[in-house]
Length: 265
Ligand SMILES: Nc1ncnc2c1ncn2[C@@H]1O[C@H](COP(=O)(O)OP(=O)(O)OP(=O)(O)O)[C@@H](O)[C@H]1O
Ligand SMILES: [Mg+2]
Image (cartoon, rainbow, N blue to C red; front, side, top):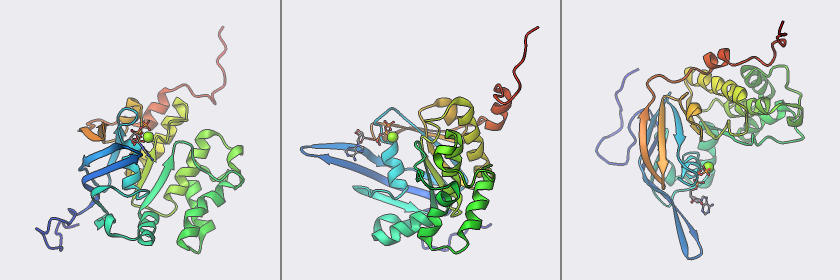
């Protein structure tokens, strides 16, 4: 692939090539009566295709606000945001929803599955909005990819937490988005299940998906190739992880709950 960018340069408003996310002085203020909460202060971040980024920082530092902005769930107060080369601030609501549906898959801490609906139907949902025809087949493929080919007819309350998060990941990837955004996707899971979910994100990342996850846990963040740390609505540190943890290797070293119990002599 060539690095040649056919677009005119020097206009100051064109994103660099292959950046999936490019924010320029992104700012978000929440007005609460007399008070203004400065949730994001002139954040300029570029994330390229294929990166795996962890977002960290204390509670209230602006992580979720940043994710909501880059996920096109909310609009910035000022600054620019280029998503896959398109300046999002210039789009109307319908175009915004369309680009969001096409480009981004979301995974949340609390899974956000429809309760009385099977795994298969939950995963079909984003395709319904997109008007796709072979929804059942695509949803079944996505569920198989996350290791839930045998659980398609289960409802969320018939699945473990880790399995529910897998359904949510299948729902996030079923549209074949460019990137996956997760706000504390392992926040409600035990250690082993967290590693299983991180192994899945690493696999998706190796297959080319850009992955951006918020986490409070340093050991979870170290599965990423890059850690961006927020403080008081600003980027405090932006670092490359030289040797990311391999989640599937970590799993091999954890006690296996399915192994038969060992009897001491
Ligand atoms: N809808 C809102 N209205 C008003 N203030 C808000 C709103 N959402 C967030 N804030 C404020 O903006 C700041 C950043 O919040 P944000 O949710 O981005 O933090 P966070 O880093 O995700 O924190 P946590 O780790 O607790 O999830 C906080 O001071 C918060 O109180
Ligand atoms: Mg948050």
